[in-house]
Amino acid sequence: MGYERPPDSRPELIERLKELHEIGWIQTRKQFNDGLVGNTLEDFLGIKENNITLPDAGRYELKAQRLGTGSLTTLLHFDPYPRRPKSVVVHYLGPVYGWPHETIPDEWSFRVTMYGKGYTNRGFKIAVDPLRNRLLVTFDPNEVAPDKQDWLKEVLRKSGGRFDPIPHWPLDELKRRLEKKLPNTVYVHAVSRKTGSGYEEFRYDQATVYEGIDWDKILAGLSSGQVYVDFDARTRHNHGTKFRIRQGTLNQFYANMVEIFGPT
Image (cartoon, rainbow, N blue to C red; front, side, top):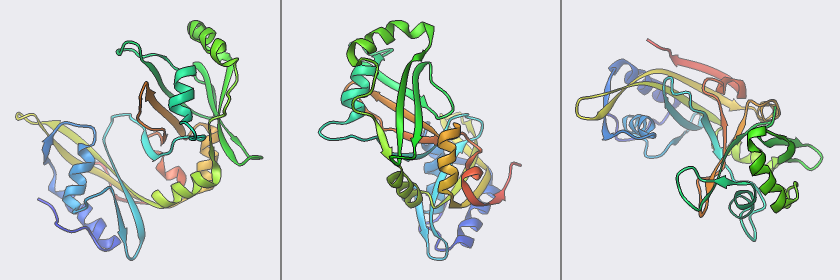
């Protein structure tokens, strides 16, 4: 079931999404995994990757999630600078500011979600520096929670309580990457259920087109706490740094929103 080629116009994309909605439950070809809801959507639409360029409407990013998961929506993967001679995440943040991995002996973990409105329980925060045109990671020992004081003592021993180097992202480059990757977005929610064979079925119940990403709103969201920066690294392995938002908030960062269909 599905198309062999991707849609070649915005109206055709919308018609295919409506058709998918009308079909109802669709069984997946694979067993359960986190990306399956998006893979099934792409298979139906005839798209081999998670984006499509339409001659009449430009580039669209496809995003699909299970309804009600509560997980954040990833906008972009983008590790901070500096990266040379070594990665600031793998060779500085992790070894100096990390903590023992929960399940893997003798490994550190640096899994933390930062935002601009307040500090995490380990004293981390992101902040826009307009003078240097950067987004910075900041650390304040005074904001570390009481139950993290043993960790803080070790951090202060290693670092002296300040970043050197300072992890950061150039705002111009962040803007360029976001506008290139997400100029327009098609966001689809699916209800899921397990079958007796162990495979999932999806019913795609909500689809919305967002067009014209607004950098000024993204920038404001970084300061207000609406845009998160998610680190996920451990010893010898970095899953990448992600810029993320809460489900249902994409409309706050685009100029236009068109609902294709809503929940049944």
